[in-house]
Image (cartoon, rainbow, N blue to C red):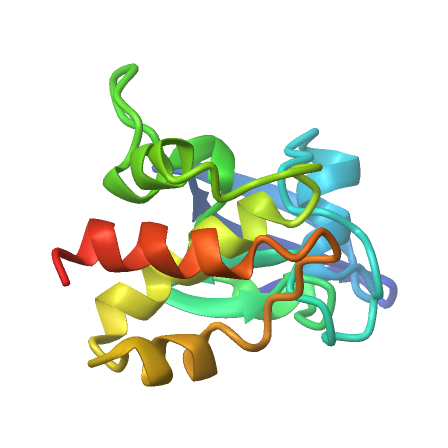
Length: 159
């Protein structure tokens, strides 16, 4: 990462499979970059404090809150948002399971829930329903669709 001047940073990252070279304000969060600069609005701005999970994205396959991560710190990394999850017109298995189990209501938290579930399954840390609930506890749903969300993730995981 090289700084063009004190308040800006040049970063190179892969976003949804596309290599990008970007100039970002040094204080911009990854959420700011995704939503405001790139128009990728799937990650939602809600609490801006890392307490709700609505802004969850995957960075190098790991779940993070985009509202807490500085964009400049993602130099060289691969970022996956909900917009890049489906491939070739085919929904990801987690997305299909969310639809099949009606695991969404208002939909505001759904992108973060889905990406958190994808990351969780990639981590291999949810071995049963209790650990799945615990590992998903950082993603809140104001509508209370938790039973359907858990059922969808279990279904997609083949549990």
